[in-house]
Image (tube, rainbow, N blue to C red):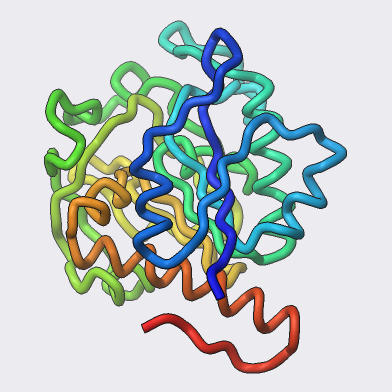
Length: 249
């Protein structure tokens, strides 16, 4: 039984949807079936969330700061209000159902906002502390800067590394951390690099892009997505039949 994983897409200025293939490929190679999510009407969010076994919110544009009660900073970049609204409601519903969630980059930011947190709208102009380059000028699989991961975390159990380097493609970042989220990884300049929910079975947000490493063959990163798919299988079986789940090996 393969779980159905919904993957959000970017919405371009001409209304077309866009998603780099690496997101779907990470799900496919881990044993899931990816379904791309366009702009879905609000009335269909509940039905969609019931049919999905997991949600993968990808990278993309900046997020409207009104969601955390701030006015637009001068260095705020492109936002897509319709996508912000849909993702916010879909993420909230998936969390209410305790379905597995992975968010990368923007997906981390949206998770944090849904949980009542806020963002640096532009880290290089809003943080007083020195900030390293977080929008790397290199291929997407290049490991640009180091992060430190808490050993007392589920992601450490999967990666088995306390310090490692990650890729980096962002100018926004988590500021105030949302309720129920724990920061489990930071860059050396203090930027939040990973959070996990203490109130859900499998909910993680990554500032880096582990899907790039997973599809490139990195075994630790592949374990993240295998655990995600197994969590989706477990949730489907336990809610359908109330019996122990058999997970992929």
